Length: 219
Image (cartoon, rainbow, N blue to C red; front, side, top):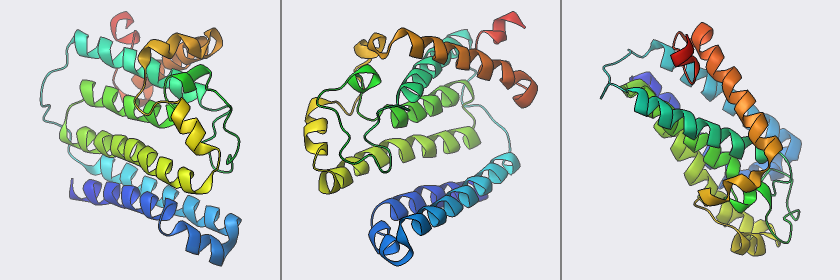
């Protein structure tokens, strides 16, 4: 567990450092492409370390035994996470290099939150913590949720400094999701999210050894 905690701390701290205080001086020294190369190298190295450490960490004990209700809640959260994630892949002014592209008013998943990708990751992490509440999973998923949500808040502050269009975009959107706006994501995004959820939860069985989603009751 110690290796996992240290690896996850390295992911979170390196991401925050490279995205904020170290970004400008490193871009000035390495150029934008050089910085992105360094950022990618650090990200892959720390993620690989965390993956190895997670596999080495002991399983269990569970803090509670998740029943069918927990699996239903986790499944619903995962579908919502996929809707937010897939809907964020187009027209997302928060993505790198998208400065100045914020539209006049939000549509689709951006009516739910201005950070749909990060909230998708956080909800995915929460869903996994609900159905596998052992120490190593809670540590891993807690780190992913912190990385996503604290990173989003820090991104707001950075974008306000660097992107003239961001203050207006921020005033038109929400940080905390308004889930009542989820139907506005569109039929195509919902169908894609359901298809991705069915495929991913099916793969949980052969790849992870745990039946997930609807396959838990069909297998």
